Amino acid sequence: MGVRGLKGGLVVAVAVVVSGCCIGGCGNGEAETSVGWTVGGTVGAREVRLAVPVDTCKTPNPKLEKPRIEYAGTRVYIELTLKYSPNAGGPGGGCLLEGLVVRPRVRLDIPVMDAELYDLSTSPPSLRWPLK
Image 1 (cartoon, rainbow, N blue to C red):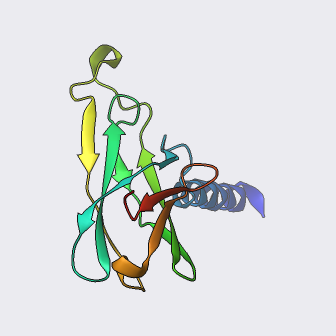
Image 2 (cartoon, rainbow, N blue to C red; image 1 turned 30 degrees about the vertical axis):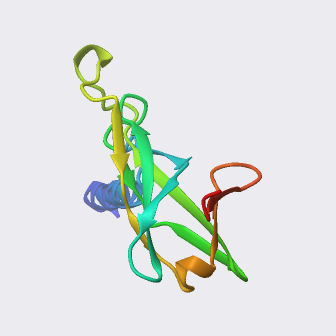
Image 3 (cartoon, one colour; image 1 turned 180 degrees about the horizontal axis):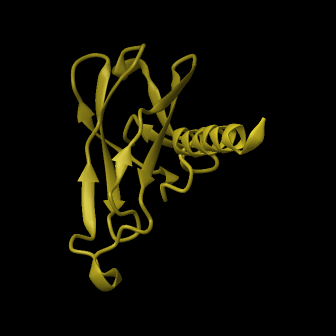
């Protein structure tokens, strides 16, 4: 095989490890957390607008993931996940804006007026709609 064959094999092995690491998210510094929400209003018969308060000092560069929705009759369980970069603070660890409200729309398979919406970020899940 010789030295030439070994170097080529080593380069391929390193490239495979590095590319696999990057595809899997290898140390990109992202974290995620389940976040609480409230109903901000209805938008049509099967859609609600949620209100999600985000503390950007604790969760910098927030990105709300697609909601996970489960149905059990008229009960609708919604979990919202927030991805953020915990190491992305400003100079000296300070932050500019502490509070932010994200207002995603969520489309349901059943009419909103027939549904009970539960927040899965709490245990047990909290009823968020209808408002009482």
